[in-house]
Image (tube, rainbow, N blue to C red):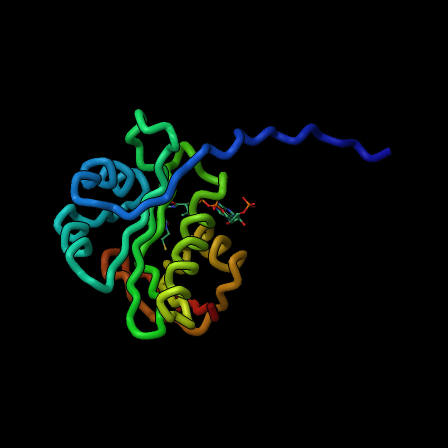
Length: 163
Ligand SMILES: CC(C)(COP(=O)(O)OP(=O)(O)OC[C@H]1O[C@@H](n2cnc3c(N)ncnc32)[C@H](O)[C@@H]1OP(=O)(O)O)[C@@H](O)C(=O)NCCC(=O)NCCS
């Protein structure tokens, strides 16, 4: 008889709302940025993105209005028929709950509504969680950019998805 191990129960996905980032969100967004990335963006870079017409930052926030913790964000550009994903992050305490997937699907829906036909991104070759996420959503590898990330000389994997 096959031995069956009990599955580790996953915590239920939090009730989240998704909305565009506005300047007062910056401190909470920076908390997540620093938790999620070894080489975080500066606050100035986020402020610059907020001023660009072609750039959108979406936040995933707890539906309970009293909790300001940013659970996830995605930054993307819309230029002509292309949606370019610059970054996506989920809070370390809330990973594998579908937050990044939800943010990406929302970005695709908004992009499609504004005429985007192709989604593109670059991801570090060793970022296995992100690679798995993008593949699960249907992205395919279309190239490698050697030493793209100058901080560690790491290659970028280029990926595309037809929207
Ligand atoms: C990559 C990242 C954004 C994923 O966020 P997340 O909210 O945990 O991802 P989701 O729960 O939406 O995962 C969706 C699917 O992606 C895949 N996936 C996500 N994380 C994974 C992991 N650590 N290992 C394997 N597969 C993974 C799975 O297929 C998953 O579906 P499943 O949980 O039903 O198996 C998150 O790990 C993160 O913030 N990492 C640090 C920042 C970063 O590297 N961002 C990407 C920059 S390009």
